[in-house]
Length: 153
Image (cartoon, rainbow, N blue to C red):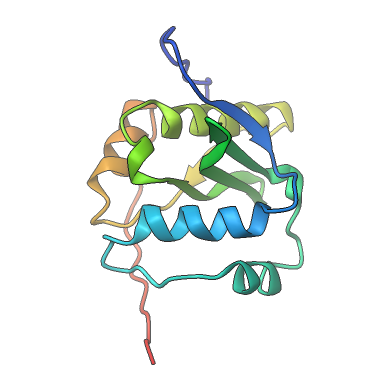
C-alpha cells in the first residue's frame, strides 16, 4: 500500500508520541467526545483504559495530535496477523474538518510502513459517515461487514 500524502496545507497542530503524565486521561476524553454520537458509544474512563489495555499494548503504537497545548486526537496502531491494524482513530468534534484525522491516519500508515507492514487495515462503525469518507479518500477499500453486540447494564 503506498502512503497517501496530505496536500500542502497550513496546520496548527502537531503529531506527538504517547508520552506525558495525562495520556490516559486525554485518551479517554478524546474517545468520549469523538464517539458520543455513535450508536455503539459506551463511555470510558482513564482507569478503565489503562486497566484493560491488552497485554501486547505498546505506547510506541499510539500517536496524539496536539493543537494549542491540548490533545485533540489520537490513533492506535496494532500489529495483527502480519497486518498493521488501526485499532482506533478519534478526533474531538471541535477539531473536525481541520485535517487532524487525515494527518493521524497518514502518520500511522507511515509508522506501519517503517515497521515493515505491507498492509494497514481498520474497522469503522457503519454509522460513522465522516470516518468512512476519510478512509475512502485515503485509499482504504471496503472488504466486508462485522456485527458487534453490546450489552449495557
